[in-house]
Image (cartoon, rainbow, N blue to C red; front, side, top):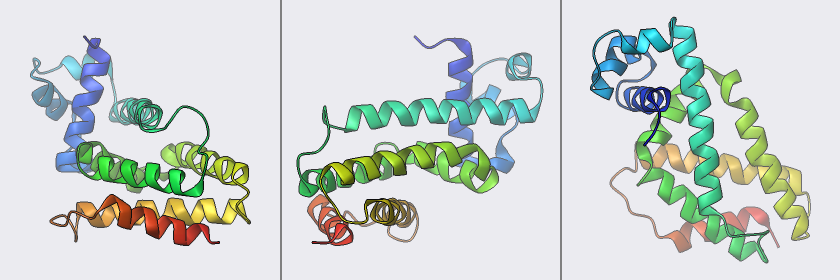
Length: 179
């Protein structure tokens, strides 16, 4: 069972996913968590503290998702990496759509707060690509991250009714990785 702070931050992420950053208030978090009014403000005195804690919780949850999604150890081929990334993107767009919407809203409102997480993802991708001997691993890691971010945005907005096949996404990622 999560502690009260974690419960409040998960509720805050839900509020951001549903109502955007403008909807993130202490009262909205109290209501989303089903707790008495004033509970959130007892834990997080200012809106800035509330937002900072929500970003921290987002990074925790993202870290858990990345650990759960990846195979143990580095990928053995670019095909394996592409398939894993395709599954991750689809999971973020489907099962974890609310968390992804919250991440996007927080990214737009507080870009500096999520920069470290983005750089961590790109550097991990770069490391995997270098291990596979992919040429220009740094640029290709950025290209793949940009593609995945763009695809996620589209799957949550203009393509929300589509169900792309993982193999199609993996093929697009492999094209970005080159020969």
